Length: 236
Image 1 (cartoon, helix red, strand yellow):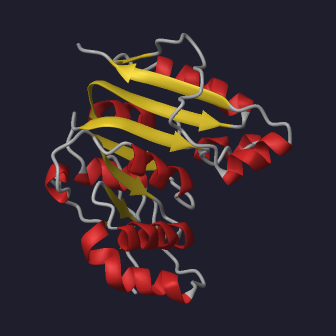
Image 2 (cartoon, one colour):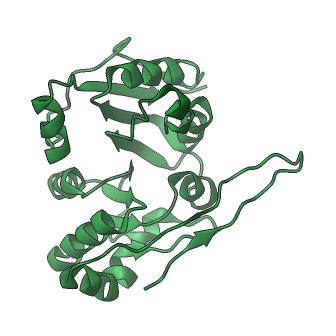
């Protein structure tokens, strides 16, 4: 089983760039192990520091939607199955959910959905062309609720700028969280990116095509408020 490792890099000014990490294996069931062996070559991508032509990965040349941190992949597979006119690339670092979704894709021969197991910043920076993505889905990213942890949150100005560069004009970023304070931060961060606009001037109504996940249901049971953010890339 392949484990990919990214070592520390330093920029020319001596500051640390990308952090080191190792993708560690989890205890997997037999079907998950079989999925990695049977379906990785056809339905999964390996990380490489090389820009790829994503449309050549799929049978049809269709708009590309990238989901970052798909967890167990429940929403991912349902959206891909219902939206046949789009191609989907799911990014996830945790092996359990990654292998489960890969198993579903392979068993059902879903030709508009592929996955990659690596750090999203590295994948987007090194492998995805600028202005090539029609949409990003980021559902329930880790809120890192403690004050000292909040610098680890995914939605920060630098990352939002990276997403904007990869988007086509008219493309969107769709985020959902059950952490209200983080939701406000997302709105504020996206407002700092000149090429992004928020047509809702704040939070948006739920998209009818986004399924409710088991994680979301647990949040609702805890009386967490679900907040949704939708921003789009404008020209110029």
